[in-house]
Image (cartoon, rainbow, N blue to C red; front, side, top):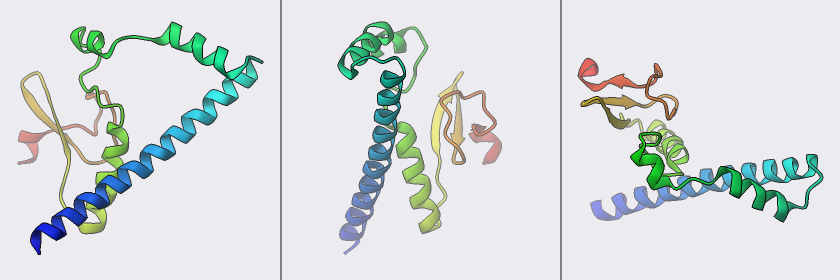
Length: 125
């Protein structure tokens, strides 16, 4: 019985993440189409040009310290968890490390940890 409830909760979280992901993908696709139209370029040419100018390997970005989290859907997951936790009245938060200290955020997702949303875990507990 408990396993079924846990499985159902996990499935609900995955569904929410998929919904947020789909919305984000649609929004990005619309923006790309609009940008291509503004430049009067065929969509395939615009995408090809963008890929050449903006491509960087994620491994290289992580090695250079420019990107710690390589999960491209992390923001969608954050808001899916936030919504789920709110509905179920669960205390939660995303935890990251910075300079050997742990920080937690459960308000608004930001990649930059110098934001007021990221609070030192030791200050809260």
